[in-house]
Length: 585
Image (cartoon, rainbow, N blue to C red; front, side, top):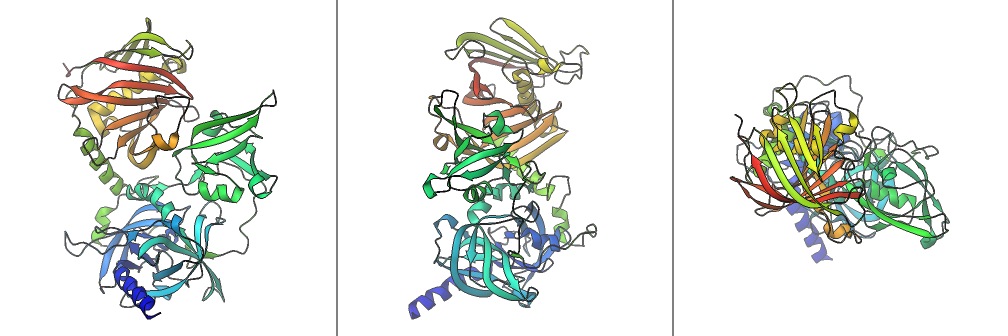
């Protein structure tokens, strides 16, 4: 027993320096990097009534801090503490793996309950993990605790946002909800922590200053034949969504999601809440066809968001008298003016962002890595792309060998001022003025069945030549998302094997949205563009362009193999024979 006590004390002493007292918001937090990033609860930063705050550490010092990113649905916030001297580093906690937790494991909760720690030394409580993969209903669409950790380790008002550690000193969760009696002053032995594995999925978005959202698939499920392993999850209601475009319909059975076989609606909600809006993940669904045969379909689905109430939920049970956040957010009548703090220089407001300042930092870092593969800023003249390959659209699954040439003229439009995109595919001519309001919708989607390849190539040149300046309507870092390079064997998608995590840029220009995927490998490919998607209509499928076989072209590297997809079908596989780019005359 003595040895166990000594080990517990050693772990506490090792992790204690990373625990944060969030003074302005009246809660706790934990440092997760040496440069001062720290996790806490959304409702703690909401109570701060502004993005600039003060935090205390067990070293006895008070530090200026600023809000970085928000996950309102999941009740998580990322803040950044500023060092006393440039270059100083902070102690930080190591992130653990919350999926390894089991009921009965011991845990340590640390924080600043009742805001009594005048010297910022955190209190420590020790207790059991009572349950894992728990679900707690949200308040509206906010403060939804999915796949959370239930603990009997005491947490009280002021512990909100503080760390939950395992006995190896690894951060396994962020303390949030607790069940309190006597008007919130006495702990009843039931608390909930947000799992660190869920937070890991959102962390790149939080570091990019985003106001993130959680996922919805756009349909409602009910459980039929609840007999343990025989239970089936049946689609009972569906709205216009990517899932619907992928073929999901009412009365289909959802078999698996994100690689997990489904057993109950509760489990499905837990899984869905782990992922951010916009991610693309695999699902498997079944149906009985007209011939009474069972069809099984596996496909990728883009996840919708939940904050806009995109999916009606008739009959959903109310939250009931369950646990609620400790201090809780206070209503705002408008943020107060920013205090005179060094942290105010690190805050930039913008709609849709928690702090656009940090998004700009991520943009600059990613674009710097991207431009190492070639700076095409001087090639503002015409671009010509000559290819041969296989066209699948309208000619059957075997495809047809074709020649396809594309030209992007910088001033080829009728007014001699704006661009013109021309394409010759299998002898058929297509042209598009991407900035013209007079172009018909069908022309913007040319060539037919490509989803708008001419527009996509124009947007690609825009990124290569102008970077962020080419997208004045909108240009932002989107965090990290899964990306699925094409598979040579189309009959076996094997999404888990194909998946790579890629950094994302989001753009809007010429009335269309773009999403650009970049390699985040720690090698010479870091920052290389892997592919992109261009949406002519947010309620339709995008034109997907996958890039491979990069080679040197006039001082930079450009792809020499392209796969173009639209919906569930490959439009064409093209091999680039020549790139030609000109400087402006």
